[in-house]
Length: 379
Ligand SMILES: [Mg+2]
Image 1 (tube, helix red, strand yellow):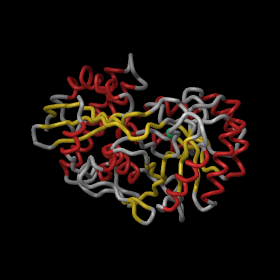
Image 2: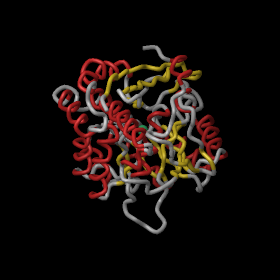
Image 3: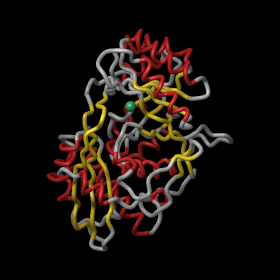
Image 4: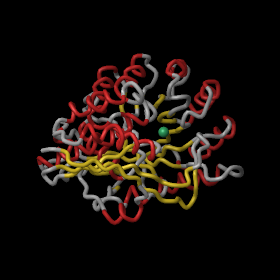
């Protein structure tokens, strides 16, 4: 089998209510940078890159696509190395790795379809048939005003929808943010897990203050309290709070995760398949995590393509440790409006009784909805 075409495309739609996290970057559109790989056997695959769409598309079009066309898509390790060698000197973090990720995911989709099995089978089989979604939300939608009431209302809505966990964005100054998180905890009670995500918007000093204040609120993890690249800062903060520290959506390849793990910087690493290097690379990162006692929980923020890929990997990640009554494997389930999460595939993910089943179709487990591609494709 040979790859005959690699097409990088951008889907874009306006959102009804722009929103921001602690970055202060207002999301006015939702984008998806998808890669479609075709072969001479008529089998095709889909992948996705996380990050600025025009940039990841440019890397695929100009650097990676010429390397992949003509290759046997079964050779995912060989192709991964070829692609990495091409970008290693200029973009070993960021856009370059995200572009590799999209192609790698598409190649795994093709491999699964070739054998008529889900990707998790090719990764060694499924350790689980379902995962537990948590709602990611409670973004900020205005500059000034009452930030507590909408946060409480949104959190209560997720609880009523049956979510067992809620990850809330935090961004306010440390005193106001403590009051906001406390109000959410008071509103949802103690039977819903709460995670907080600062999108690296705090100084070490503020993060330390907040972590100490959050401790009585039973926070399951503090995500990206500080810059993703200040690993010494994470290691310091870890010694000063009992709240587990999480991060990884802005770290790329096994090299970056090796540094995080060696510095004992995070309790939970959160590689995103669509930017950490794809399925090939996340399995290597998983091995590093397992032997170091670091918990791995996937970061998921894109379209259905990335979500289905993540579900296949979540099925195949070995339990660490094996235990009689394991903790739930959390699936990040982003809740801001997006036609690319629910409508892009003909078999959307369904949340029933608080869990999501691992898809069982060949490849990543979906067929693409061409209508959505045609409606939203801008490049
Ligand atoms: Mg995050």
